[in-house]
Length: 350
Ligand SMILES: Nc1ncnc2c1ncn2[C@@H]1O[C@H](COP(=O)(O)OP(=O)(O)OP(=O)(O)O)[C@@H](O)[C@H]1O
Ligand code: SF4
Ligand SMILES: [Mg+2]
Image 1 (cartoon, rainbow, N blue to C red):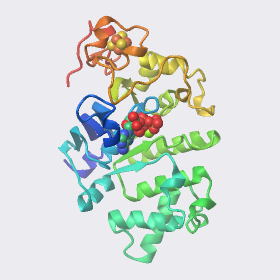
Image 2 (cartoon, rainbow, N blue to C red):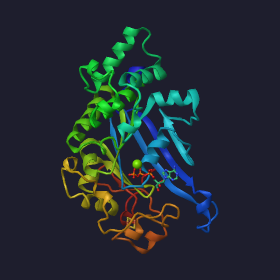
Image 3 (cartoon, rainbow, N blue to C red):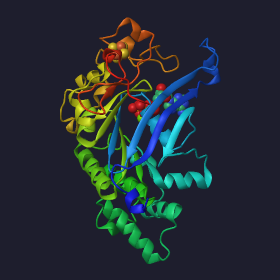
Image 4 (cartoon, rainbow, N blue to C red):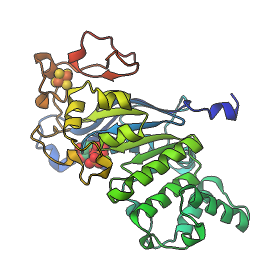
C-alpha cells in the first residue's frame, strides 16, 4: 500500500484488544485483604479502535480507568494482559529508541498544560525539543525557525514570534494547552491521546480548544482519543463514544446514538446526571457530584458479574453472577451494550 493510500481517512491506526491493567496493592495494604496478591483492577478487557480522521470519546466518572487506558496506549507503563496494535502489528515498547519511535506516532496531551510544560524553559525550547527528538528537524537554523513558526500557526498562536520566547507562566491556560498540542504535533503523530484536554481550562475557551483539535483531526487526518467526564462534549466532538464503568467498557456506538438513545443503565445515569445540554458552557463536571445513585465500587475487590449491579435500577439476579458480554442493540449498526437487559440480542463478535 502506498503512503498516500495508507493516510486515507478511516484507516485503523491503533487498536486495543483485551487491554488489562491491574496495579498490585502496596504491601502495607495487603493484610487488609484476605486474597493473595490483591490488585486494583483499573482496566479489564478493553477493546477500542482509533482510525485516521476520527475522534473516539472515552467517557466515565472519576476512577473508571480512562487515564489508565490512555497511558497504556501511550506505552507509559506495561499492561497486565491484552494487545496493542499499531497498524495491525502487535507492539510492546520498553523505553529507549523503541519508545521514542512509538511516541513519534502516538502522542499524549495531558489535562494540565501548566504541569506538562517545564516552567524554566521557553516555548521555543519545548517545541525545538519535540522537533529534534522525533525527527531531527531543522538541519539549518532557518529550517528550524520555519518549523517552529509552522507549529505555532497550526495551533493558531499567531504571529508565532509573539509566543516563541515566552515562558509558560506568561501565557493563559488556553494558550499553554495550544503549546502542548503544538509540541505533540512536532512529533508528526498519527494518533493523539487527549486526556481531558479542556477540563482545567476556563469554560469560555474550552470550545475553542476542542474546535482546534477537530480542525487538526481533519487537516492532518489524525486519529484522536478524547477522554472526558462530560458526555455532552462527546456528542459535540466525537464520532464514536465509548462508556467506561469501573474499569470495563459498558456501551459504545456512534456518538449521536449513544448520547441520544443510550442503552446501558449506567449511560442513562450519566446523561440524567448532566442536565445542562450546553455542558461546555457549564462550570462543573456532573459526575464529580454524588447524585444519590451510589458510589463507584472498589476496584480492589470489584463486584462480581456486572460491576454496575450494586447501583443499577434494573438489576436482575443473574447480574450479580454473570459478566455481561457485548450485545448488539440493533437499531443502529455498531451500537452495543454490555448488559443482560439485551440478552435476546446477538453477541458482538470479538
Ligand atoms: N499507578 C497506580 N497505582 C495504583 N492504582 C492506580 C494507579 N493509577 C491509577 N490507579 C487506580 O486505577 C483506577 C483508575 O484510575 P484512572 O486514573 O485510570 O481513572 P480515570 O477514569 O482517569 O479517573 P479521573 O476521571 O479521576 O481522571 C483508580 O482506582 C486509580 O486509583
Ligand atoms: S447487566 Fe444487569 S446490573 Fe448490569 S447494567 Fe444491565 S441490568 Fe444493570
Ligand atoms: Mg484520568
